[in-house]
Image 1 (cartoon, one colour):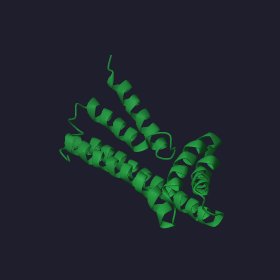
Image 2 (cartoon, rainbow, N blue to C red):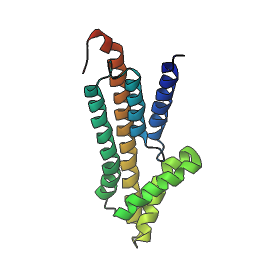
Image 3 (cartoon, rainbow, N blue to C red):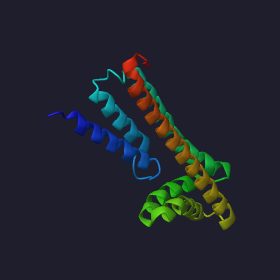
Length: 168
């Protein structure tokens, strides 16, 4: 029996979970995308998708991970938030998962506001911090999603053209 079909199904499912994870805060999105792509390269014994391509994909995954941490904090800091707002936004994003799309959109904002209020700030500065954290997390999500699709695109390009001698 040829197990490669089942391995490809597994790789695709991991990639889909990773793409979902770039939007859903509880899943490690881009690392899952990388894992799925790594499994895909492994299926082909790293011949079509070589170590150079995997290295490029790994660097992109690391960039996405850094962006994830920096964008939320930068958005909050830009509008004068403390680290409480950042952590509140992160907790709010995770808690928001349980309330559907509305919760995922409002969770970071509410969490950041509550984080700032817990530090003794007034409602206006807490609201600004919430907006900053929310904008930062939305931008981080957009960048992570773009990087994840770029990674998949590089993989598919290499998979399609790798057999023609076009390798990276």
